Length: 156
Image 1 (cartoon, rainbow, N blue to C red):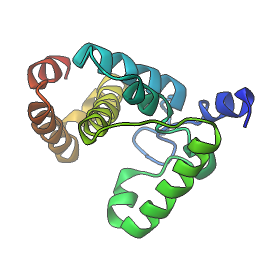
Image 2 (image 1 turned 120 degrees about the vertical axis):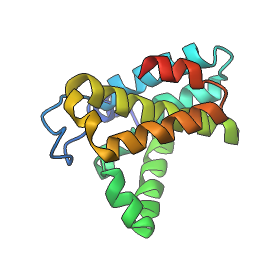
Image 3 (image 1 turned 90 degrees about the vertical axis):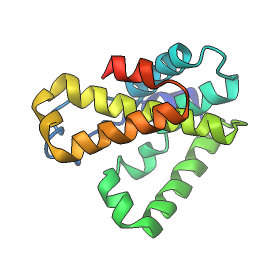
């Protein structure tokens, strides 16, 4: 694959399938950049592998689109197929990473934290809904498990 392929993959629009957020312009590349900044602030010792994983984790959406998490939750077999297609595409771009389970959990926390903060910034009224309140609770529990609850609580 080429630099152009990777660049184009970073332009995929997030939130397009979410009726509450579909008018928010947010590209995968910007999302990944914010995640890396969060990781470095929350865990300054983040490995190069974890940084690469954070940068590349959504580039596969160039081939699959950005599937809503509710659909993935309700259709785990399809979600697994989508993840495999995405992972194969990311590998074809030359992004490989050697990460630990803890690093994967850190990237997932930053992924969800960025989604929450994006919604909070663009659509603050959504934060009153039970689904977003539940997501906030899950974020704080995961942040506590990963040793950064105070910093995450301060951010949200």
